[in-house]
Image (cartoon, rainbow, N blue to C red):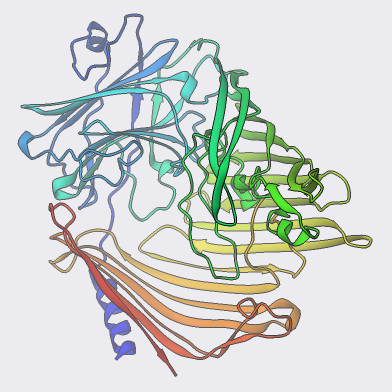
Length: 631
């Protein structure tokens, strides 16, 4: 039955796929202004009269290249401090404009109409800023797809009898751009009409492509801008007092009082239009959102989101190569959980800090006029001690984490046709006879001129020094190669990844698995536009995955084949299904956690079926199920 369904879906997709229209990039000229613009959502400032109008939007969703159902007009101005955008989003049913409220950065998930202004200041078509405002006024900004990017900017919206308007002011302090007298930027405008899932663009980016920036238009006209000095300093001083009851033999005998204070500062300085220096001295993260604790009984640590502002902002460059997990800086000391076992007879724990104290951190990041991204981050955490009370009334200290220096450096060169190469190095040095680590990764990506095929190759080397009774060193490696067809209705690819048992990047990054070789291959057939009368989109992807343990003559850990498919109906209901089978018994080398013991994973079949109703409605449902059959 499964095989029959597989053949039917392939045949049906091959018959219903349709062609695509020619894409013609557009050009827009921004106009300078010297008059003040009030950000109030109204087109009543004199400056807007001189602005060019970008119109002639075209539909991407639900029908690619179809005429839009509502008209859109956008204007752009600039001065020496900021870029200004005004958009009139006409709607013949203004009472039906969806405008659900939400928190900042939730604009992509709200049941609300939206407008987005996107641009690539370096015009390399690999990276871009996206500023989104919903009809309810919720702001969202992204750098590429990174939602952790945050900027300070202004916007205002109004809903009237012609539709709605949005006005934006994006200061140069929020973005990076080349140091050139004449600027040429990649440009895109888009709007979403939520009630009918329509998505309109100023310049069409075909659904069949993965790098849509290659099809953005171009913005000219910006020249001789002299942005102001970007310098901010935020000092702080905090005082803490704590009073807690003290018990002896279950009886309260008094109170323990503690008092502490802290002070420091955050500094941000724009070296020029392209590079920014960030510094934090003795930071206080006591007001940062705490983690939602997760009960974890797996063999691997829990990876938490970063909530500290200094490490949230502008770190997208450092994330390349997966060598940087910022929570390593100031994490729980390595001997925190060992302290109870290091006590002598009669001793009690007085203090045992659960975080290493961060003394300072410095970050420099930006990109040159030629597209070379440069990033440098250095952080220092101090000696961390647990304090233990002795039976004679004195106390002693136990070092739980030594003085540590964290450093990461990256060079990322972008080329034409979405090609790039980067080198990144992370280094962790601890004081005394403690663990040190150095990891380097070199990766390159090549696409042909038509951006149809992509080849990615990377290699990584780790060097770790540890002390037991003597100095021990281990060198590890990892490499990855993939070849993919990334454009068209039929897309396919294959990849191989290998890491030996000594490869270790966990001092500043993280890797759950090592000592493995894995191979993955897939083929996708995609219907981008309405087909077969009832559906708007769909895809089906058969795949094969094999993994083995490198040190055991590539002994099998998993061999799985299967396929998944997705369908979106005209009424906005959707279905996602995944079916597959393991072709051989596998062996889990991590779950037993006992040397020489492994867990056998028997051959099995599995599947899941999931449905969602129309999320444009006030009440929507997700429902489905999953099964596993042991053979």
